[in-house]
Amino acid sequence: MDANEAREATRREDFPWHIGVFDAHCHPTDSMAAIDEISKMRAKVLTIMATRSQDQELVANVADRMGFTEQSLNLEEGTSGVPCRVLPSFGWHPWFSHQLYDDYNKAVESAPSKSDHYKSSLSPSPENDSFIASLPEPRPLSKYMERTKQFLQKHPLALVGEVGLDKSFRIPEPDAPVREDTERGLTPGGREGRRLSPHKVDLTHQRNILTAQLSLAGELQRAVSVHGVAAHGLLFETLKNTWKGYEKEVMSKREKKHQISATDAHDHDEQKAGSRPYPPRICLHSYSGPPETLKQYYHPSVPTKIFVSFSQVINFSTSASSKALAVIEAVPDDRILVESDLHCAGQRMDDLLQSMVETVCETKNWSLEHGTKQLARNWRFFALGHDDRVEKEGGSEM
Image (cartoon, rainbow, N blue to C red; front, side, top):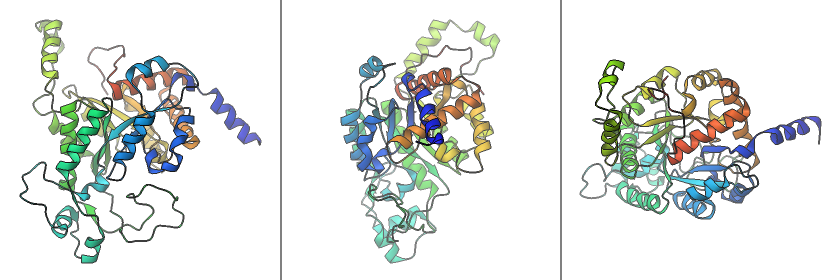
């Protein structure tokens, strides 16, 4: 072991893993050959995302093997040497949303032809018949929603995700050869290093797929992990529509003093809680927008709880790192999360999580111990709804 390796080993050992490190967003089922590495990891829990047809069952099966109950997680709190656990999340990613046709938000007498569907869901509309023929047969959104609801009911702690909007992504050429440097053994259906086509998924179509999944999250009151790239304004408007008519009343300090009573206000909130059509908690995963855009999410009228997570592979892999640091500073202390967003379980996932925790702590001027505890509390609040914060008047604000 050389000097650099020795320093890295010491850094890993000095890190407060015993407190509990929680990955808010990752994709280990993309590399099933390494899935057993999860049990050897030092992280406490991985929140694992489903994204497309090929990984929904995989996520469910891994959760059956490596999942947890709230009771078991509480018993293991602060305990060293306990195997890493997983929390499943079921969703259809915007990159693959063209593979679904919408018979859920609107009445459809019969399934559209493959050609008609892809010509309406992709932009620019493809004219090459061989390209259309090479795409997968479109699936009905209603069937996917039915199956997802079954997964969520079987896994009562599961989240909805990864879902969202992406204005930049172009779908890969289905028949393009896989790049030689692409990792072998990846779960089918992803990009796999293939050449990108000129076609993007129509944003209206993406929005319809997202809206359906947000509705299910609201119905079952599950947290949601959201992807947003180059569509921050439209994403906010789409999320905002889910809580339209349920906005929190914004009162002045004078009005607060004269409200009927704190008990009556609490009772009123409890009456509304059973019929909320919006997700109770939302995480903007690997958020890439500016700090100013976040302010709308923390307006006092927003009834859902908004979290923001950061990853080394997305937020700190480009020249935009300085922007990410500014956003970390701006996110309320009780709403920030860390993630790996990695496709393969193992040591590198642990290393990326450790590095992200260290970056957050340094940026927030937290000690490692305090910051790791804060991030653990935040994950429990986001994923499980356990809010053990010390409430400040007015809640989280920017």
